[in-house]
Length: 291
Image (cartoon, rainbow, N blue to C red; front, side, top):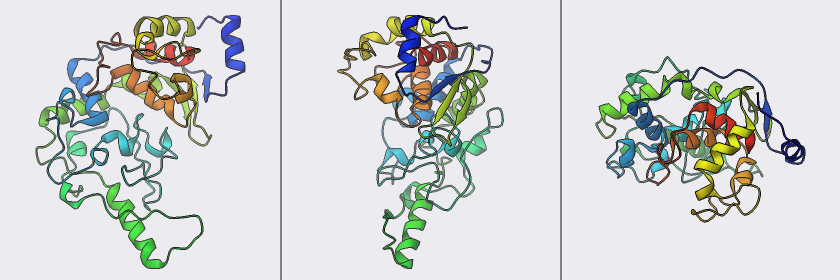
């Protein structure tokens, strides 16, 4: 159990972060290098440290329409997780809202295959683009043709890409499968429950999380870049994320994003798995409770 201090109790009572504590964590497993690469590929498989070439495939101009997390969410739960209210923009897809497809885009670890990743049976070709961009307004001014263009654009933009052409390598697909079937990367390793009906999303932490241990891990591995979360939050990365860690976590669904990035790092950046202390799921849960 986490050890409570008066300072910690007072800070929780004065901060409206979407976080409560309960549940049981999964046993700790050590991720191999393939799992680690698969986690980076989930973020952005085109990056070289995620096993990619470092560039977008022919016919695609926007990397967000190729990223696994863009439709399935950082927690792989789609509209059942942190991306429940993520809207589509010209520059990105979403987890399904607005495109007429009621599937959640939620994945079940232990059941993922390379065929599911490749999506060769009807996946969107890169040359198909991302569909028309016709945002709806709140005034109901769109005519039927305009609505049809909107619907078609959203559907195409949210279709799973066909990765069977070789741009995503067999090694990357295999490692994505290993990562997605790695139970210690499941959201239940960090959260006892995710409630997307709350706005912002309400996260119930595993009850093994220890705030004091989280503070120690943060101080040792994160402070140098992100700074003191309670004061200046200005480390070596000049205050990123904007406004500091606490302001970032207060936004809708951001604990899902944090749990992935703080566990595995960010491809194409200096924030690698090793540079942040090779964290376990327990380390990440501890930090989230502390923060």
